[in-house]
Length: 336
Image (cartoon, rainbow, N blue to C red; front, side, top):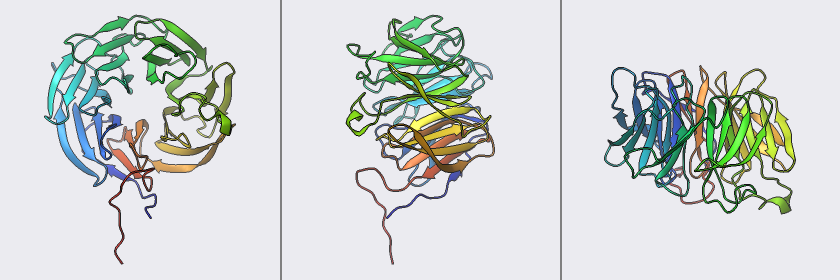
């Protein structure tokens, strides 16, 4: 039986790595973007670099601060510090579209999300960082802008499932999180449906993956987790119910649930990834699972929860085998 392995650190970038993303369709395929202007494509199965894309840029400003796959896995979105969003065709290895003056120029990981239902829809924080830029990837210009949605820069974006109580009747809604811990749920045309505050600085937000309320019979509440100075769990109609304090003074930069919501991974300053078990009324700390030499900026899990990847300022991409896949076939075997 496959067991959790040792982390492997891939060093194919010449700059600080700001973003990583697993393909939502291919079990092993993932990408990374860094401050060398490159988007690298890898296979987690063999821990190998498959291809390198150089982002076209005007002048010397070509640093990449966020990457995401579209929901069909055919394209990679890359936000840059030149306020551009580049669209890369995975199979052809070409940059097929560029949107100018639409993305936030930040030294940290930028806010970028792809619609999990529609492969042509995406959203990022706007040029001043406080609003949203919406994209229909079939169009040569951004679809729409939502100006000054927050008073502070947006740190993370998330498309919410339609089962959440303040989302129903709306096909696509975006949860935006600002640096001061304010969360807002809005429609794609900018109408605010819900909002709450966690009372501390924030960098990342994650929703429990099941349909809202579907695990209530087992005692599990659907939760929105906000990570930053600490980690806070928000339950609709109740408020903030839990705070995780194992990170001390290290800010949390990314939160990721496994596909069944049973485990939570957190990445923070200091280069540490921690694991938690989710219980009906709390998240129990299980231990540290990965260490980088510098701060971690981004993190993602594979389609079948068998690999975890990280982006670090030490110019490396961490790959941690988590054990057997949650379902599906596997090529693993042992010869005696």
